[in-house]
Image (cartoon, rainbow, N blue to C red):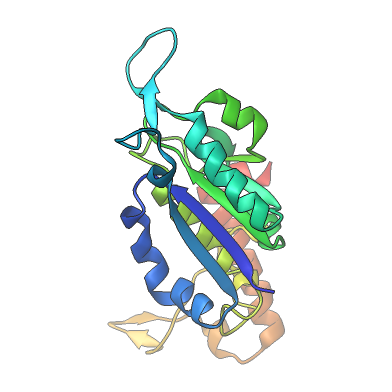
Length: 226
């Protein structure tokens, strides 16, 4: 059984390209992941396929209607059981590696891309299981956030990366940033690779990398130590 992600968007073309290249593309070609993008406007109301309206109580900005979202998600839920229904929103929980790890262990995930001032609160209360933000800033829509979340999840699925251990040594996997990395040549314009990395002593190299990771994290992201 492959991992499945269904993304619901008002602007599907905005999110298609990230899934047609590199690791995300190969994961789909290997049938390890199935990614489907759904145009919410297909569920819109009336002649003009309306998907938004003014907010009750006034105020600037439009609000995504409940009806199209309910119809789309309910249709998907008739076809399979979903382990998570994610809504991308600035006031959601901050996305991090631990969250990506947990989501990667599921089978079927829906990601609803927010737009305008957001979605009708009744959708959040009735359908959404996870509300996620990728940072303390506002984007024009949730498509970029959905691509970020999907990429972080998919690369953790067994078989997606050629070297399965690669994802386990990424930054944040152990609450530490990654240590410095080097490649050939060993001496570039007088700048030399640390001798320890040329020693062939894997135990000492691991110890050095861990020490470096701790120091970099302490310097750049002291909040991770708390």
